[in-house]
Length: 71
Length: 356
Image 1 (cartoon, each protein chain N blue to C red):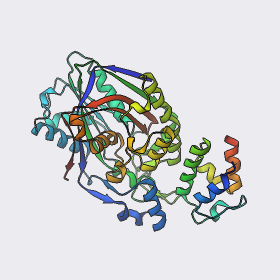
Image 2 (image 1 turned 90 degrees about the vertical axis):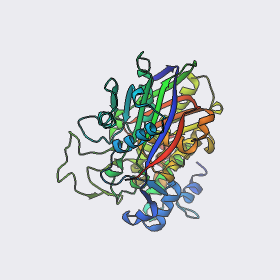
Image 3 (image 1 turned 90 degrees about the horizontal axis):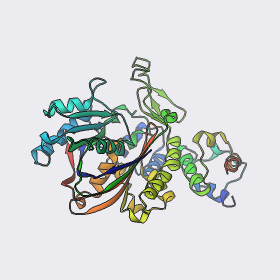
């Protein structure tokens, strides 16, 4: 998971992100970014997430814990 | 379900596309998305232009136009058609079946089999499999398989999830007995627990059309549609395809004792460019062996996308050459299916337009 933060930052079109950042605080936070995340976690971690699960995660940390719980 | 067919072949493919073309840019003001978000959507999904029928045009109109074209050009004799299989989820009527409407309007012989199969994006391999089975009959020598939909009429103009991919098309495939010895491998899979992943909730017998079912309602994502419109759970469909299609292909190749390198092209259903690229990545197949340009040129026309893909990307090359193809379709049902077969030396393989 060491490339998790830089990868998430790239998907959100930000230089860097913090684990405590709220997902809906990002300008690029929309259904397309969520789809990009679904595809990213499927190909990089072989973890399948639904759009609803990602939305309910609320923060970057929430997504990280969600992914880890399915690995 | 593993399937295997002996001594059958495709001898011609004709795709019929409505002339009416819509550009993605012309519709973005309908979507609850900023212009920059819409342009990002266009780039990632590969949206550009798509072909849709005008109101009132149905699958049987496109099909009759295509078959008449083949009769007029002496590429098909109407008396040789022993069976007509129509794979569609946009029938002209609930009763009777659309294949019978087509048979009647074209004056085909009465001594023939007509069948409608209700399948969407997975329907090409399923229709062909049915044709191969019919050809085991002594008296059936030529089967016409028609795949197509006009479901643009059932997608809300304010649904950015489904609207920009939707295209209408019909494709006609001629299937015959082969005199040379060959084996075609097939697979059909079903998961009806995912029935709601791609659904038009109202308008059938379960929930008939009423004033309420026609009411437009906005969802949490800002897409507005009624219960009579197609609704797709995009993330569920994406995950289903990435999970089920690669192992299905691995299994069919293994049964045929061939590798991915032996396959000339993976001619897959065309949901959007993004999903096809992700599939190719996961399967470790180069993009040039898995064309993904049908949605950007014509739109996604359910079970017609594989033959449209073949007509558009291989086309005339199939008149003098032969390629080893792996076909795969996946979508509503849920359903996923595949065929592994040699296709070539066709009598025709082209696209014509329908002017309505």
